[in-house]
Image (cartoon, rainbow, N blue to C red):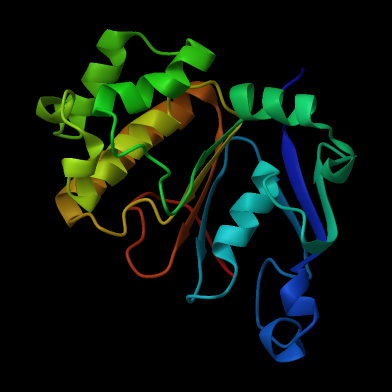
Length: 220
């Protein structure tokens, strides 16, 4: 499968908004109901109020949900036609998602959580993973159960996990909401380095605490 160079949205709107004009069609948005193209290699910062649909947008682009009106296309191919095998390949080799709720396993250690994904992609060595953890100042937590970590530490674990694969697009849904400025900058540096190396696009959402990375600003 070739790389995904463009993701295009045409008239996209969550179905729940379409059923409620006040919640959708009267909203000033750079994304909903517009013609929007995300290009590989670019960075996009999508700011939104709570309830604006940022997590829904990430879920649509990742193929987890299809409760929307409009069309989402990857290089002119409508994603509604993709089957489960196609989505599995896309999620393993082309699109990485860090959901807001992180979806870590609290009963597993930090390394076990990360290796669950890395074992599917074989993209990072153990040394590379440990280096990323060290850069985010949580290497000493690698053998601890995730459930015993702070939310900010868990966010950093989830970010390392999200980087353990080849990707054309990296989707980060409020990735630094519980991080202070120092930790935010550490995360931004690591993310910037990885997407530059892979020539990937970054689509990151934020309600209040944005990732400290230079990106095209959009409002949801």
